[in-house]
Image 1 (cartoon, one colour):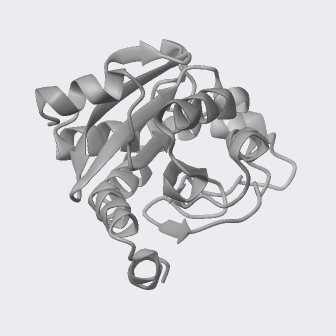
Image 2 (tube, one colour):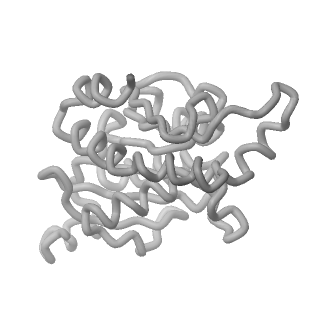
Length: 202
């Protein structure tokens, strides 16, 4: 956890080095859906890093502390997925965090549950949460994609798919990778993004 002096510095808009944002939708009815995978991964990181994500600002929940030797902000936008960039952009400006130090955790329908993929930049790839973030801070931010599986048929409605829930075996496979998500974030903060990609993108 951050020391008291560091916490005070954070509250007054001081320099933070990294932000990790997990994407999802805030209402209880969305808990456990594929689209809330980013929220669940961030909760896992918060526990691993010993950071409590319970303060409220910028229409988001956030927590402050240290991880991998860096001052870090953990953020859960409460804007609903399609407006995630509003909260991420506001927090970035407040803490003076460059886009290259913003790590975004989110669901990916092109990956099977139990798979993750790290990228250091790129397009939204059809993900509305990423599209919103790109509109606010640009494309040059690292992201950790967490597999939620492809639609069963091309005709299946994408919104219905991502707002549905994984089966028990798929969910277990997905959550078994949260340790790796955590380690990938550590590596990115240690300026070892290429190592993270080599390790986890296979």
